[in-house]
Length: 423
Image 1 (tube, helix red, strand yellow):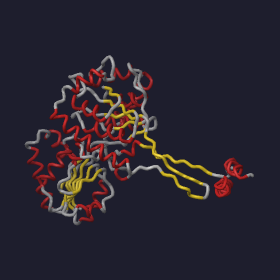
Image 2 (cartoon, helix red, strand yellow):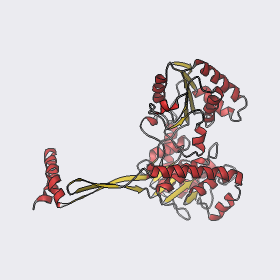
Image 3 (cartoon, rainbow, N blue to C red):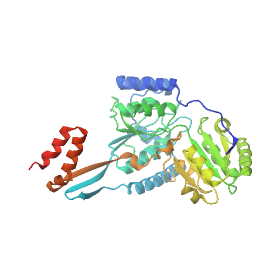
Image 4 (cartoon, helix red, strand yellow):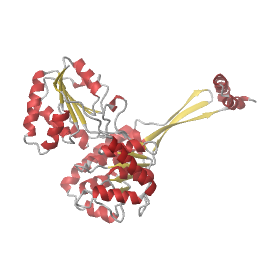
C-alpha cells in the first residue's frame, strides 16, 4: 500500500495528568460525596445548585423551550432506535433443554437493575447520545435509568433540546452533573436532596476525562465500552464521488481536533480528487477550525492495489465507523471483520448512524473493534444459566465429576458428588 497522505505518530490520548486527576476526583467523591461533587462542579462548570436533581418544574420549564422543529427529529430518532433495539431484544431468548436423562440446563435473560447514562455537553450538546444510552436500556427492561448531563456554561441550565431527548427517551431520574464527578456520583451514590442511589452500570461517551473515569470505575460498576475520539474510515473505488467522500471525512473530523479520518482507495484519481475536495470544502465549512486541524494532524489517504488489500488494511485499522463506497458493497460485507458499525453503499453515511437511523452510535475506538462491537440492547442484559438434576441425572453425572475432582486433588469436590449417589 502507499500513503498518499500519512499522519505523524501521535502521543497517547490519556496522559498521566488525566489519570491522576480522574483518580483524585473519584476518590474524593467516594469519600466526601456531595461536598466533592459541588467542589468540582463549581470548578469545572461554574454550577452549584441547591440540588443537582432536576425537579418536575425544571423539566417542564426546559421542555417548554423546545419547538416542534427541534422536537420532531428527536422523536424520529427515538422511534427508530427503539424499533431496532426491540428487534435485537427479540434475538435474546430463554431456553431449557434436557441434555442427559434427568439433567435439565437452561439460560435466562435478566436485565441490569439500574443504569447511569452520561450525556456529554462539551463542544456540542449531543441529543442523539441521550437516545442511544437511555432508550436502549429501557427496551432491554432496565427498571431504573439515571441520566447525568452538564449544564451549559454561562446559562446555568441543561440544554433544552438535550433535556427533551433525555425525557422522551425514558430517563427515570435526571441530574445536572458533568465530567468524571458525574460518573463517580452515579457509581457510588450521592446524598443529595433527594439522594442519588448507586447504579449497577454506567454508559455513554465523553471526553478523555470521562473515558478514563469509566476505565477506573470498571469493577465498581459495569461499563459499556471505552470510547475515545471519533474515527471514520472510508473504503472507496473509482465509482465513489470525491465530494461525498470528502464531506463524510470532514463530518467526523469536526468532532474534535483528535478525531481520525482515513480514506482507503484503489483509485489514485479518487485519492487526488478527494484531497482537493477536502481543501475546497474547508474554505466554507463553519467548523473548519476544528475539522481542518483534525484532518491536517490525523487525516490519512491510503492507496491500495486491490479489493482484497483494501479489506486487509481496513481490518488492521479497525475503525469505529466504516463506510464502503464501492460498486459492490455486499462483497465487503461478507469479508470485513473489524469495525464498530458498517455503512454500506453510496447512500449510507455515518451521520445517519449518529443521528438516529436505528443502529447505536456508542462504538469501539482505538482498534477495540478487533474484539468488541458497540452498545446494543444485549449490553444491558445478563445471560445467566441454571440447572436441575434428578436422581437419575445424579447417577449419570456424579461418577464423572467425582473422578475429575480426584484427578485434580479436590477431595471435597469429589465428596459432594459421591454423596448424591450414596444410596
